[in-house]
Length: 257
Image (cartoon, rainbow, N blue to C red; front, side):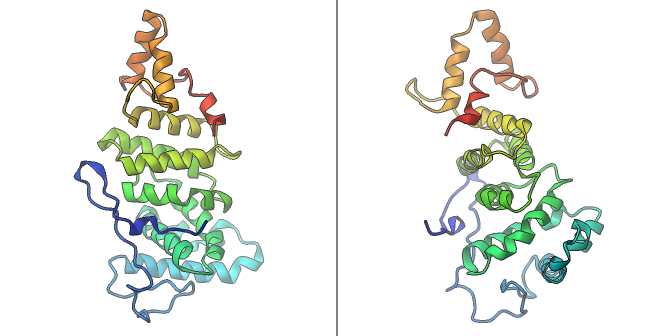
């Protein structure tokens, strides 16, 4: 199935939080960029994230140079590792990864470096924007294959924090469902899977009794419990406690397709 630039669609976030920006397509990009980059990314000095993209260009050049030497993370990303707070690079790095995987015929080779790079950037980040969450979920299957080891934990944390802060848009909720499917394969911690599933459960709105979503099944299980136990679970399910240690129907969902 060919890759589709989902960001080129007019997808509106709910709650009036605006549109996901439309990525530049080949017909919108000028024939030549102001600056030649190693991966062909169209970079101009007038770009709002020019400084960050210049750093990423230097980083990719360094990665290409040291790759045959089996380098450490510090040798691959020396500038990023020395930054006290690399979180401002998350958005530009995801934007560039997205461009490479959609627009660049040779972009897959750069995912080898973006995987551990984004993993390093995310390690100390506790929150992300809804746009950043979109990109992380969109390319989770690629990043997971390329040593982005903390991706499941970060997406779970980012999704939960966004849900608590402003609630999740339908777009973001769909992206979390997509990520949960990716992380069902081996390699993601049980705690990340549980937090991700719990966030989806909390964010999904109950509908009719014929709803076949697993979150609806969990709610029906809650309704079938003895009254005392049901009240205790309801307190947790309505958000008046931290993420629960157990919830009926939550563990089997990790094995569902």
